Image (cartoon, rainbow, N blue to C red):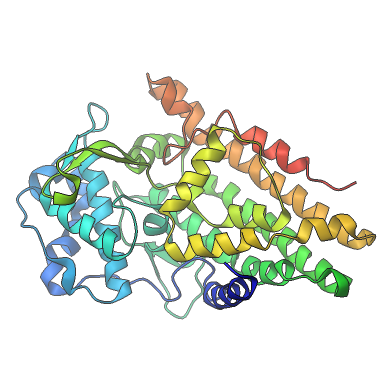
Amino acid sequence: MSSTVANDYLRSSVSQFTINSFLPEVQPIQKLPDEFKEWNHLVTELPDLLAAKKFNSVIKKQDVKDVSSLISKGEQELALLMLSVFAHASIHENWKKETRGSICPAIAVPLSEIADTLNRKPVLSYYSHGLNNWKKLDSDGDVEINNLAIICRFYGGLDESWFIRTHIDIEKKAEVLVKAANTLMNLDGYYLDSSEVVRELNVVSRTLHDIKNVLANVRSNCDPDIFFNRIQPFMRGMNRVRFEGVAKFNNQPISHPGGSGAQSLILPLIDALLGIQHAEDELLSYLIHLRAYMPIEHQNFLSVLLSKNKLRSLVLTSDDKAITDSYNNCIYELAEFRSEHLKITVDYIHKPASKYSQSRERGEIGTGGSPFMKYLKKHREETLNHLIT
């Protein structure tokens, strides 16, 4: 991609992503048209059907619906959310005993088709489950954690709602990062405005501090044991699952990771901005793999940011202490965020696994299947290694 094209793309992306950060620009659609009323109804009944272990017996009786009538992006996104939630509900309904190896045509066929339409994967992603799964309680209020309701839930309840709302709140607070990244990614070393650089770096450090606190506050209304036993099982991905009735898969099983905060654009954006380099490891490879599960607009935005990464080299060659100090504050805050994330994963996955799971692996992998325990501390230490002295 040429420099001119990259600059034009970055400007258009910044315009798009400064409205609601990486959330949809407008509130997601709440219901599909009447011809999909069965799906609308299933969403409301899903917690009860899962509790009674009756979801699969209900869904397999439904006809395959044609999703080609869904023309607007909002309707298509809602259909993808509903169908991917139904797919995970089907696979993991009886997760304590078994994981189903197939999805019935009533889910599999329209899920595959709508995913293709949106250029996405036929699995529950972070974007669908979190970023496109909300409505405002007060339509005149802000998009913030205490003004949100969740459209699609599995078992339901405050803990599940709070977990999702926490991520939405984090993403909304990150909108100022996009503006700051645009300014800092386009710095000219010959005409470096120290006050502007310091101001934008301070925005980055303050925002990282704020979203760390939001993440930590997940504890206030989401109990680790409930998360481990009622939320995380449904977030796990698809391991060799057959999509019944989908010709392109030729009855062959497919695998996809589940929805995970690792599919968020925030940390890759900050790493790209600050020039953070991580040594090759299993988690890094997995994180790069998960970028394919972001919306294509997010993938393209990240590619442009990675191609324009020059902030760190400019800070290294600058003799301005204020710039260096502000940059280092960003590094500290990013490391603190990663420390909090590590604490959360230990409290919400590793510790409950020691109490409830006979599988050691469940205590070593994250929400969507990420191999976190071995590497999160390493990534935090690698972040701190980028401090400039």
